[in-house]
Amino acid sequence: MSTVGSWEAPMGAVTVRPEGPQRLLAAALRDMFAGYARRPILAPTETAIGHSAELRTMAYLLVGAEAVVEGLMDVSMLPPAWRPFHLLWLALLIDGTIAFGAVTRRNPHRLTATALTVRAGLFDQFTVPLADIETVRRERLSVSGRGLRPVPGRADSVICNVTGTAELRLTLRAPLELRLADSSTLRARHLHLAADDPATAHRTLRAASASATPTP
Image 1 (cartoon, rainbow, N blue to C red):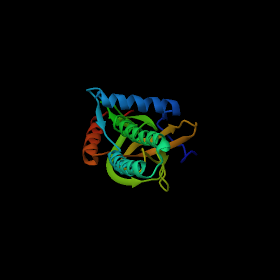
Image 2 (cartoon, one colour):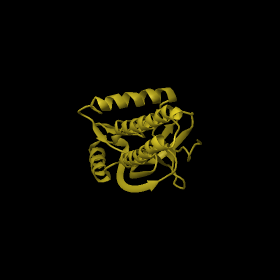
Image 3 (cartoon, rainbow, N blue to C red):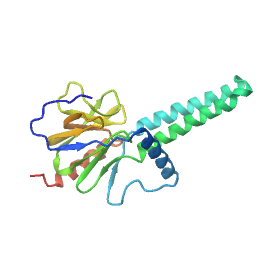
Image 4 (spheres, rainbow, N blue to C red):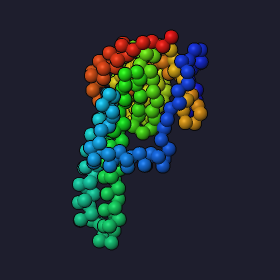
């Protein structure tokens, strides 16, 4: 990913923390078991801003329908010798969907008294001080791809979501330099985030940023 925009007065470099393939699998398994155990997602003093609920619903519906079709095919069409492999594939498909649901639900945006941690599931995450947020607005925006990526045609704008549509736009007081895992950078003045309840997230983030003291 190439550098976007010029570097006139960025607030400072912030490293985006993605999960590698091995850590991604371990984290997905951790979130699955934590979900089964009903462990708290965040500390009592933190506020969760959920995202990707529409994606989870779509995935559950598609895989549920696929499981029914695959089950009927297993009974009526496949030779008996192939059925164990088909059942294994079906089990992996269902487990993968459950893991996706757990990862996106248990890794929301995290709001504390001083900062907002922006998350795209396990793909990317970084933290922004609340005092550096100038405005919070509602704006729907769809950009192809996943994780943290630039918004085509909009200077200093990035979107961070699992995939699909973002519903909020955060404008920072000064540009933020985001350093990616491949050592490239993105300049971000406008952050587009996904939220399951955009109205509530908008009110919560606007109030939290308004009460924060701007950085000198």
